[in-house]
Image (cartoon, rainbow, N blue to C red):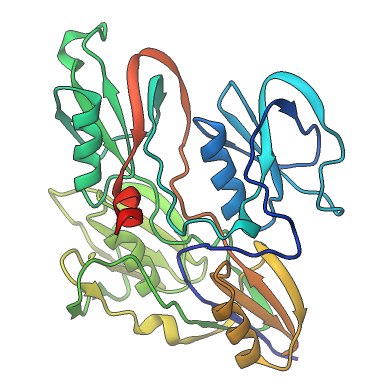
Length: 357
């Protein structure tokens, strides 16, 4: 029996009530011990709550003063225990609350350094100006600002602009003997209406200069990742491993002949041609990241269910009747952070502008 896998990229989350009560309150000095699924870096409990909201199966969380956000779930969909604990804040997913599809994160975090390699640095008079610079740069998602008291004078007033992925990353792609994949993405974070054909180099590898490795279903999918990464100058895609290698070297582009590898250039100032998202991919499976599953009467019925559910980004249908709706976190995920008296950090206010319109 065939298996059909369809990705529907809606790139936002509103709500999935699943019969749960909307609970926005944060429980200060309260811990929900156990039931951890995942831990992520987070600057405060509000950010942690949004991470839980966008995670496919997180129902509640606990945030510690060490900047750890613990995402949790239980079969009963309720915390097993609640334990008063100084310095821990807990709460619930906002999935039932129909949260803003693009959360506004206006807080400036004094004495906190967001880690990650900057793609651009400039000097600004204060952290507010650094945040404005981040907001007006379409690639910037968060920043770290060096205060005037930073020990090394040459870095004082420096504003480091930083980036995390803007489009959903499928956590894993594997081959399946009896599977067919159909990709159908409706929106891909583009700012231009003019479509263009990207430049691809079939049977060509560009060795070295890797800055990231991502799962991708095709060279065109890989090209989309490169196009929205501010440091990507070109890429190479290995078809038999589904690996997309983003690369950076603005000074040279060495190419060598290589079977099974396609390389190419990003499209920067026009919308990429997204015909690849409507293709059928035979023998590919996109496992995990389920938000719910149910029996249905075919691919189109499963597709409609995903389209009508604002939490669903993509889905799988197994044996033409078992429909699995899926999503991944799309808000900025910090690679790390820590306390540092010489820094101020924060996020772009672009989503706050979105809320005001």
